[in-house]
Image: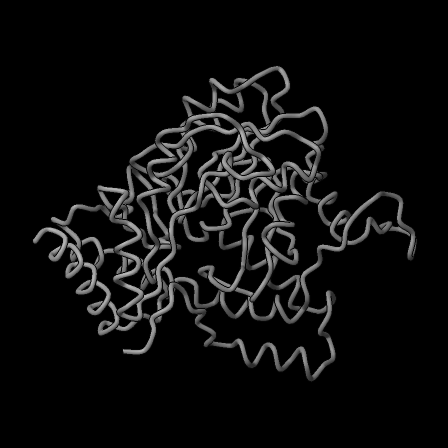
Length: 366
């Protein structure tokens, strides 16, 4: 069997038609009808009032933090068990990330530890809906309201994820999404920013476009950035959004199949906990014993199955290292892998993946 990647974009539907329209009309840069169409359609899908496109998911977080006024002297509480972009963007504003541990059952940030980490310098809490499962938004929102803190949602991995029926990204003061090539809907590179306050949203739009004046041509009255998405990217995004429900339903079936096949193994899958919708950006397997994780990955690689390890803990990275011990996240990080998770996986490929995983554990037990 040919190699099965962890992820592969599904570029069907109207992708070619919309991109060709951009090419034929000449609207290939950051202006054109698909920008607003994609923004409006995305906002409707997640239940937000408005959204603004950006060039990638990392600058989406940076833009949101800047628009909220987070900067030097501020602290932002963030899980250490996350992709490094969540942390780098905090550092880029001049603020200080304050790392906290996660929950074993859900892999998401622990609200009790979040509250314990609040100091007089805390300006915001950043939650990361890791691998497609939502954080406990009831608890986090309550903390933010009671303590007067801003809430930022990193939804890079959580398109289609819901907490008690409400799409993530609509709880916070600002939220961000990624459309990288391995995301559930993709624009190749790209991202989206949501903001509850109209003024914050307008600031996002100005900051992403060189701080241009809304009333005077080529007049720039603030230090700003060029974080704009192209019309071609937005055209792809709109076509992807039209297929989103099909993608999400297929990914859910893939995750259910993995869970069924791996039942009884010395490992567990990342299942939804509580009244949530897990979007299964990545289907994960968490082995009971960390020492077998890399051997399992090697076994699967030999059978042409690509996997990826769980994210390393951010507080161990050289540029933001702390001496903290965060046992839950560290343990999860050492035990988890992401399996092939894209909706185009065939039943034959899934059977090969599951059979190979089971074969490994059969040999390990022998």
